[in-house]
Length: 384
Ligand SMILES: C[S@@+](CC[C@H](N)C(=O)[O-])C[C@H]1O[C@@H](n2cnc3c(N)ncnc32)[C@H](O)[C@@H]1O
Image (cartoon, rainbow, N blue to C red; front, side, top):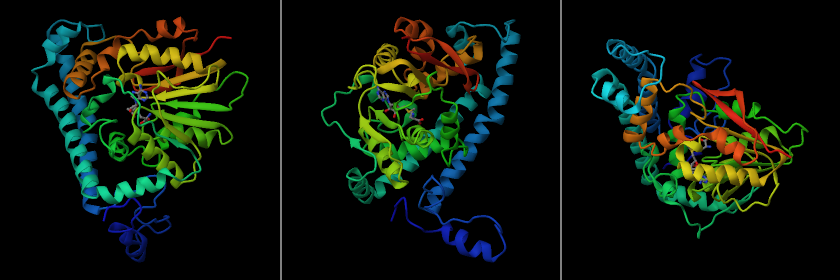
């Protein structure tokens, strides 16, 4: 029986057999299902397959990516192009599309992801009744509130199966479960205890007057950042909102499990329903690149409306300020859009966020601390 809390399989080994053999001496062995914040995948064979998949991802995003980058440099040099200069998108695609090393890297990336989603979804659906009962029971519990909106009108752009996630965020009752374990695999073992989100939150900028009473996390997904915000600001009223009902249901269940009092609601970031001048901080993490360019503009306008003067907007995303669009970057973004169903990636890259922030009365500052890869993230303060 699949249950997030069940103690089976290797837990028995971890809890009893291994220490008796002297392995893990001095370590704090915990049984499967209750290790820190990440509920272990409850079946050992499922966890093994997921681990294998993650190792494959480490290889594809590590050694194979380096080989692909070397190859891209050679192709650019052979075509007498500066490797650090901007290259036109069409030219980049034509140069790289049929190269076998680049193709192996990108196909390896996406095929591994497809297998990962498939095995997680199959496992969840094999035990769907039990998981649904668990989630239904959690809907009614606290400490935090849960608000679902059965009548919400979801814009079409939210309905894609972004990064090949089956059903996407709004079309599968178990989207939260699937995203949680799938994104854990994305983070390649670096976020099993939410440490990546927790670190990000230590760097979240606060208003200059230091007052933090209300916080909104827009596009909260599985609620990891929302929970971390509540942990950093225990006295604040924290809300996580998401277009996906299954996402906020899962977030609420998970927060309740550990007594985290953050609140979750199914609402759109561009139409939050919160009053004017309400929040001290609004965050969003990995939202912009999954939203259409038009909706992102509305989200920024809505955020400026609900922030109080002096309040801070701190969106973190992979490419808020990408710098020079080199040939490889162009190709990677194109491939991600075309084959990894990151449908809005090119829209995102093409958006002049600085202009949109400033048009809505927000300052535009680079937030060096929340740098992700090559892109520094940004923050905007609502002008008084
Ligand atoms: C890549 S996930 C990021 C989730 C989470 N912030 C994290 O750190 O993993 C993007 C989330 O944004 C949500 N989303 C997309 N469009 C939205 C909108 N207009 N309003 C609210 N949430 C939205 C999706 O449903 C999804 O859960």
